[in-house]
Length: 112
Image (cartoon, rainbow, N blue to C red):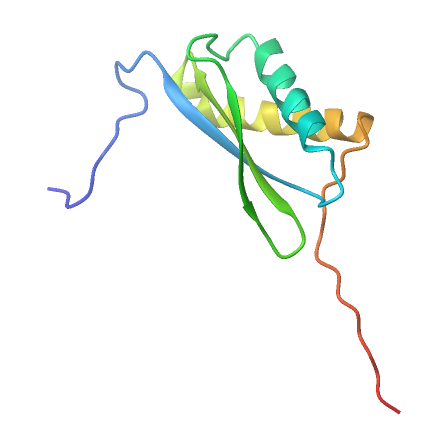
């Protein structure tokens, strides 16, 4: 029927891993970023305590550092809601902690 792996996310799986990708500015305190992301995940009642949430710094981008928060959710059918809630919490907490979300900027030089 299918040539690729099919996962029923509403089935009997007791847990499902959720990955949230975040970009932070190069001048960000990465230890602080990690602490804030882990605190957010640990405070959420829908995040499994075991295995514990984790933060990984994935790569250097053109204008940011790619960070990934991953955690296991207790209700796979609610992955979309949980992702949305965590993103809102990250946005709010990063603003409070002065952690910058970068965006591309370009310098334009005009020859005379």
